[in-house]
Image 1 (spheres, helix red, strand yellow):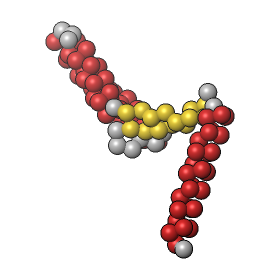
Image 2: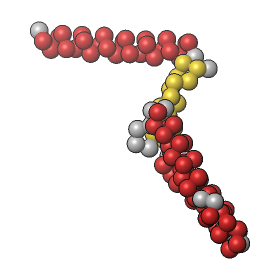
Image 3: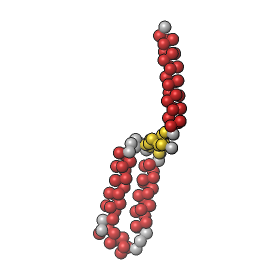
Length: 99
């Protein structure tokens, strides 16, 4: 008897799951998954720093006195904090989208 109940429960879960998915698709609701955020942030930060280091030594000295490197770190920390608030887990996050 428990095997029959288990089979019936599994069948009902599959029907409800596919029905819920169809309803969400019909309403135009979906989930988008963004991956590779760590790589993107690292690349973007290295590009910003290398753009400043390509300048002359006098300009790099002035940028150092103005603490531009600290400002870059603050900006990227804020971007990462916003990603964490939006639900990043590891290197991916999912977001509900409406069509």
